[in-house]
Image (tube, rainbow, N blue to C red; front, side, top):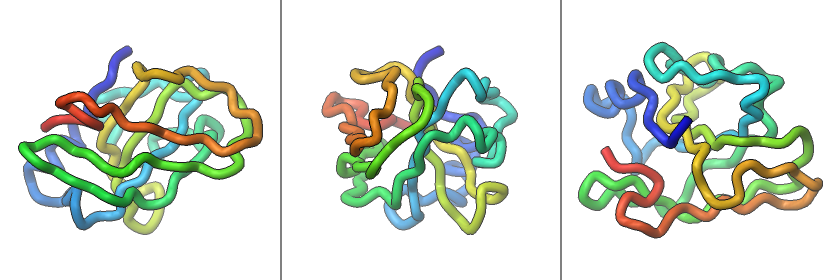
Length: 135
């Protein structure tokens, strides 16, 4: 696969129901042996089976959206254990997985795949022109 945005997440940006700067944006580390993304129909975090989620971040900080490019401070996930993960999925956290819209999928990045060792996992976002993603 390759890094991309979920189609329904893109729609939510255009309709104003996802606000990068003010919403609670988080990510999960995902085992692709247990999750096959459907970028056309997967809409909410609940589309990802619980068993595929290796770890969940807190809310992103330091978010920026200059020129339609999404950026944020690097993300630290503490004490990550479990199966190898091959992807990072970004979403807007609302109140539960069934109402938290999926935004982006990253499976092509330095350090992926990774097998957790029980230590902290640092996600360092790309510093290139597209940062995390570009609308």
